Image (cartoon, rainbow, N blue to C red; front, side):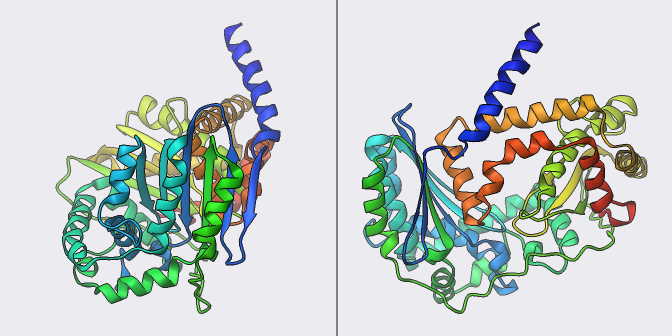
Amino acid sequence: MKKLLVLIILSLFTSQAYCNMLKGVKFMNFKNGLTAVIKKDTSVPIVSVNIWVRTGSINETPEQAGLSHFIEHLVFKGSKNYPGNTITENVEKMGGLINAATSKEYTCFYIDIQKDGYIEALKMLADMVTNPLFPENEITPERKVVIEEIQRHKDNPHSELFEYFMANMYKESTYKNSVIGSDKVIANIPREEIIRYFKENYTPDRMVVSIAGDVDVSETKKVISETLGKNQNTNPKYVAPDIIEPFKNGTEFKTYDKLSHTYMLAGFLGPDMSSDDIFAADVALNILGAGKSSRLNKVLKEDKQLVHSVASSFLTLAGTGSAYVSAIFDKDKYEKVVEAIIDELDKFSVEGPTREELDRVKINIKSDWLFGMQTFNEQAGQYGYWKLYGHLDKFEKYLENIDKVTINDVKNFMKKYYSKEKLSK
């Protein structure tokens, strides 16, 4: 009875949520190409202010490897109206949280703060991404910080394996570029090149301001208009990176290190963000390897005891995405693990999921999505990311489209994108 009640409540919640994902969200377009997304919610006196920039490692040349990430660090070192550590100190004084992240596709900056401080937070982030000073006396010490981060990245088997995996999967598109980059580039790239790259990529037409929480919409629009909305820094010569990877047969890659276990990633190319196949992809990869009830965990870990852990996921990208399986196991079991994974993928491709698997995973996906959306930070982040790439419709209809996925949709996804020959490992 309790399980049935939970399912009924979730069903009511999600059906209602289908209509409410963008309810109350305001969209603003500025003459310089800047876009803003604002969601007013007075339930809690907190605001999350995000600025998303459509630049990441896919925009870099080999001579710039890691520059997007380096700039993410450097803009915290002072701007025109907030020199030195003023921004970080101001956020701490107001009891807020400031952070940033760089990926292959984007760089994001955000401040989560109580409502009385959000206007100042917006002004600070706007100044940070339009008027950074890049002080010479801060660049040199920050090189060392980032180089140490690169070294820690290399010492982490999960991180290194992902780098090998992406470089092997994406041989022609710029998704092969490493986000963390090259220590040699970071050690030697001149300040002039840093500034040039910043001016070419941090342009208003490639930015989205995304704000969620207890805000005054009119005041927020006014501040955006007076800051980011006035920025005339444009790059008419901008050339979009190549993010579509040709579908091809997979390859095998190995690297050896002094590790007690073997770490493996195996995967195949999938749909890009514009395709409705991304919904079947999420469902399929969750059935295969999300949680203890997943197929791969039951077969490889519980039944055959071949692995210490196994999981799978679909990596949604603006360009060609990828489905992957990760596993950790003893060194002498590599061939058996690979064989078992291929057997399960082959079987799944032919038979598809059971009704029980499909229903269970749909509930789990929807639950995770809805629980995540309870925070203003997550809301602002989702609005910003999907708007940045022009696919907010995919976000708005995500739960509805997950609910529509059928057993045949999953089978068709596997048949369309997977084969043993396409698998890289």
